[in-house]
Amino acid sequence: MYNEPLADLSLVACAHCDMLQRLPQLAPGESARCPRCDKELWRHRADTLNRTLALALAAAVLYTIANAVPMLGLTIVGRTASTTVIGGAVDLWNDGQQPVALLVLLTAVVAPALQIGFMLAIVLGTWRGRAGRWVGTLLRHYPATRTWSMIEVMMLGVLVAVNKIADYATVVPGVALYVLGALVFVLAAMQSSFDPREVWGKIRWAEETPHRRAAAPVAGARA
Image 1: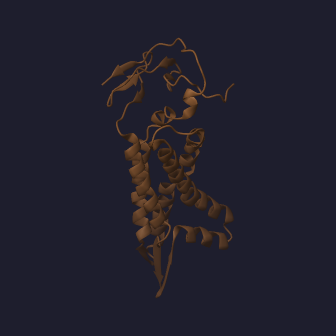
Image 2: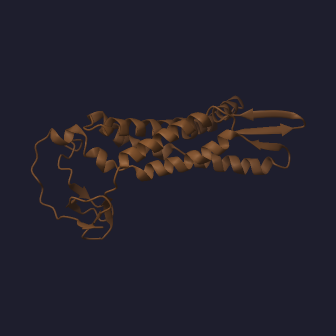
Image 3: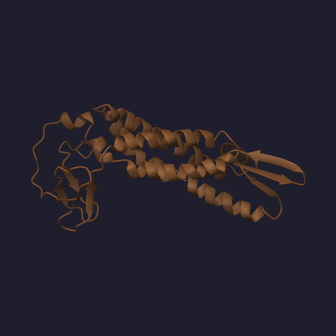
């Protein structure tokens, strides 16, 4: 059955040539490479859960601040106005641009919140030992939250718009604009430090189904 979990967690398919092989035991810092195409299959990084948890908590704090304080302020003929990320989506909705408002809300507010929330739940669910099946379910759907999280795209659009209206109004960057910039880098670092294989290896279903070890070549280990 296609939806049944693979109990033998040492088996892995190369993402480049699709060769099925068995991962050897690796020490921290070592990596396994495919014997067919010599591409890296996995690198064993030490203490990934603690680093990922710290970065996810930092991302949650930055995300909260970014959505609570003004992102931009404009001064035109003596009148000053400012808006937040969510306020910008509301203004677009009220101006009759509902599709754009929904897209901004999804990519700049909802998807980043889900990305951070999923990561916190996955890491905390795995942090103290064996993890339940629900962690695996979240891990399966986590890539979709990354796909739709586009804070950097929104910031690029804001900077282009600010550059165009700078001749007609005084633009005052808000705290949220700097916080969002920091959040982009923290999310990238969080994703870079996360090791999904460590999580898969701690999910309980790996021990619930008896299995036979499949015949497969062993990937080469390198420091």
